[in-house]
Picture (cartoon, rainbow over the protein chains, first blue to last red):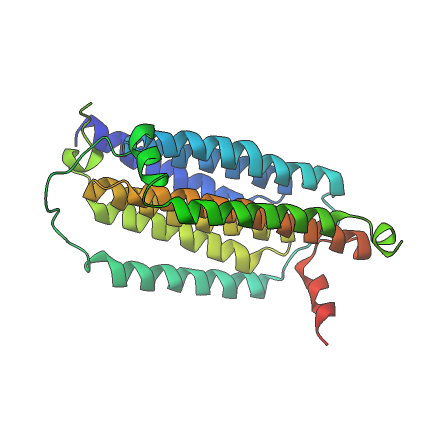
Length: 170
Length: 109
């Protein structure tokens, strides 16, 4: 086993461990912080796969923007540990069983199915910003524009929903 | 610029398939077990990230950057979903002083 293999397997184990801690932590703030750690580890996985730009964007967008939004809402609602809703042991057991069987079925179905050989010359610099920008603004320019419409509708919807109802009626 | 990929150093694509599947299953178990709505949304983010990881892995494996473009679109959808979902939660909390997913049972007609 060489060094790169060791690093990749270590990163994978850490990612799975911190993802488990997200759902096992009792305190919601701790869950958010473990999810931030998971996103950083997934970014490290991206760097190992030569997807540098995606790794940086993943940190900025997920860990920097979305998780701060979650943390902000969590602190705004000011939840204490006592009124943290708990599900019963039976529900937890059934859900873990269902999720575990989902995992087993997916792994069993997918494990042996894909051994496609790589054809043609593999370019290893595909993750750099030059190639991605080239592709995003030529081949995928229409989805790019459509996603901006999605963003503005999400923004308008969020503002409308979070407004106090009294003001809307007036 | 020439960079060696992880796939040239003996890591198989199956490793990333299994890793992404495990992350997806952890997210699914989280959605089923937790009752806190905010943690539910976080578990959905985790499942989306598992999909992203697999897209990047195959993008690198085949040496085509198209998969990484799709990662950006998934991020756009995740950001939009998180903002709208959290604002719905804030509104529901204002009405019922709770973020238990059970409060949405009141919506049935």
